[in-house]
Image (cartoon, rainbow, N blue to C red; front, side, top):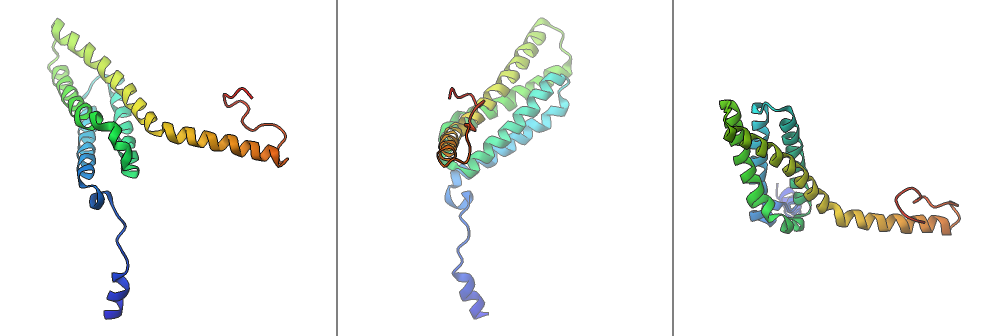
Length: 171
């Protein structure tokens, strides 16, 4: 028992977000909960187009959360995303469902539904742009690596033509 305890005491637990940054951990846990709330509202929505947008939003939010869990420094660019966009989106989708189920045929009801449909569509696009922006630096770094790799292959005589042809470069 004593030897096992000595061996085990030298092993440090892997640092987790919960252990290293509790405020971010709580923010991400709340975001996961909010994303589940959005997902739970999807079956209640009648519009197939809006359902599709909401499904994409849920998938994108899940990816954004995973990126931030993996690279916590990226969270700094997402304060509005976590603190404003997600909670307000839930509120809007919840009200959308309520009004849709009441079958309001007034001009106000129809106007709200059109605006909400458009806002959900735009939110989907915006969230996808946010996710893309989180990878922008990584993409640029890998593109630079690809160019150097291609030049090395050509310089060493392994390939004659650029492998980068057709990638949007003007070589």
